[in-house]
Every structure is written in C-alpha cells, then in structure tokens.
Length: 229
Image (tube, rainbow, N blue to C red; front, top):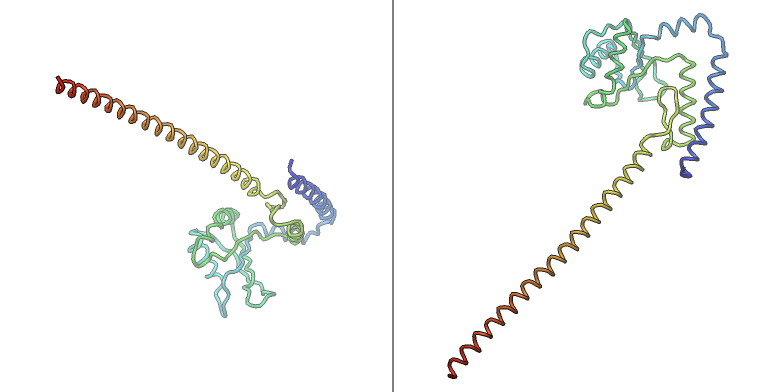
C-alpha cells in the first residue's frame, strides 16, 4: 500500500471515530415532542438555494416556473412556500417549499441535477429540508473534510469516503502508460521490419543489376569474338 493511501486510511479512521462520537452525542439528546413533530412536518419539504430574489415577488410562481421550466415536471402540488431572509448581502434567501405528497418530493429529487444543464437555473440548488441536528452534523462533516483536504475525501449523504477519482486517475495513468508502451514497441517493431525489408529490396536489386551486367558482358565478349573471326 502506498504512503498516500496509508495516510488517507489513517485520516479516515480518525474521522470515523469522531463521527461515532458525534452520533452518540446526538442520539443521547432526548428529542422533545415538538422536535419530533417538526421532523415529521419536514418530511416532504425541499430547500431551494440561489433562486433569484426581487422586490414584491410572487414566490409561488417562481417555484412553479422552476419546477416546470427547469425540471420539466407537471402536477407537483405545493402546500406552502416561504423565503427566509438572507444573512449575506446580495445573496438570495433560502426558499422552503412544503409539498403535499411524498411522491412529489421524490420526483423533484430524482431530476434536480438537471438544473445545471439549464440556462436560467444552472446556479440553483435543491436539497432536503433537514432537522437542526442533522444540519449540525453535516456542518461538522464539511469542516472535517475541509481540514483533512478536499482532494482526498468527499461527503456522500452522512458518510465521509475516499474520493474515487484519485484511484481512477491512477488507473488511467497506468493504462495510458501501458498503451504508450504498446504503441512505442509496435512502432519500433515496424521500423525494424521496414529496415529489414529495405535491406532485402536493396540486395535483390543489387543482385539483379549484377546479373544484368554479367549477361551484358558475356554478350559483348561473344560479339567481339565473332567480329575477330
């Protein structure tokens, strides 16, 4: 195992210990009935970030436009829409959308990645509306990944895992080296074959020329002999 993999494995083990400790801490905190109710209420909610904000806006129409024009979805039933005030200047406030049906949320989450391919909504993001405890956990995960290095780890759901592209890049590099080696070897072999064929052609032409010269000399000698006689 390379030194890099050993270091990353050690970092991941430390992270997993911290995560276990954090999850235990959250689990030990008794959930109040109000918090449980909030979690149930958030089940069909989605969060929309970076959707353009304007004065006297009709937020419901904007969200419907996002669903229909950006995601190409129809018959999504919206129960309520609320935009929160942004804490950062010139940054659109987050929109909390409460959907009436779980099926509607599933459909939205399945195609939300398509927004990046649209002209008007490429900078808009849709996420789950998570309870406060989960948001705190995710914030800690992001902090851990940032501290260790974004080039090594990534967050997948509530788990931290090794980035796959590093191994893929290494594998691709090895593949390219093998391919280049094969191409170079084949090129060298072709050159050797061409040189060998060239020598054969030269020898064959030289032998033909010598044979023609010999026949020509023999004819000249024969003619000279006849003339002498």
